[in-house]
Length: 140
Image 1 (cartoon, rainbow, N blue to C red):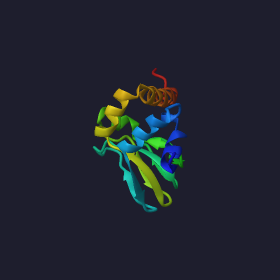
Image 2 (tube, rainbow, N blue to C red):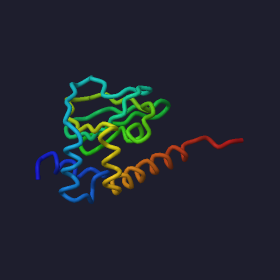
Image 3 (spheres, helix red, strand yellow):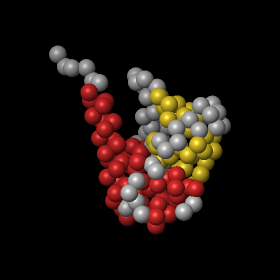
Image 4 (cartoon, one colour):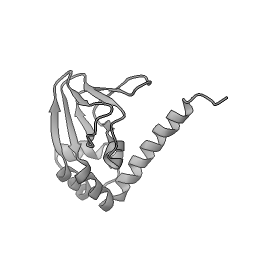
């Protein structure tokens, strides 16, 4: 098993996939590198790639929310990769970042073939929605 297959196998969205399924994920994407200070994605952008951080740290900023730092094993971009809609967050490299990227065009066929990925992404999105709803002010 390659370094990339091992790294992706530890990511929540890909846990439980077989070695051959992880290899299909690896084949569907590519590694990209970003310099410290470089923006990976910006809120409102139309890009629709899904990223997994392999090395380094990024700062994730969502309008009206507290910024947070993400590191190896963390993923982002799942909403845009699923629905093709604009980005909801800005992600900027705090350090040199090596990431694995899958485009929407490559990711959707993976979801069709490997349903467990879709289920895990839906679990993560449900957690985020539940958290967002819990932070909404009550209506009068």
